[in-house]
Image (cartoon, rainbow, N blue to C red):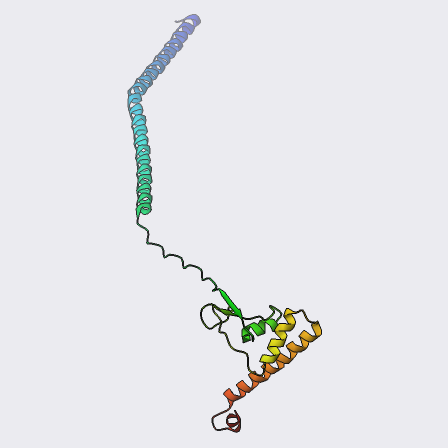
Length: 203
């Protein structure tokens, strides 16, 4: 019959054997894991290298596309710059006022109205070319002053030239305006009256 010491010895041996077996199994598993890792490492490295190569190829393709776009833009700009331009229409030379001729004894209606508005003295000069006065040589019709207004127009031009009193000038301007207004009223009545009417007959 085994003693208690022998039982303890057997128990210790069993424990040691179990521990040794567990340690051996752990070492085996670790070795297997290391072997698997070593086997997988080349495959992982190859995958990483392939991904890097793909990224580099994509970047190179993008750079090439940008370069091609810039080249096409430069070619278009060069072609646009080399296109022949349509000949420009030569600018029209500015019209020059003709030489001023002799002063008229009676101003035209335009020069008289300028004097009435205080913009000039009313002096009227012949133009070297054409029948218009020098002031209205371009763009305006030179209309003679009505016969009944001419004496007052001459006096107004003389008064402005000699710097007559303000009262005399204003009186002449008022008289001329009244005469011109009456002339315009008669003209309007004549245009408005039908043919054969008394107003038309009087006109």
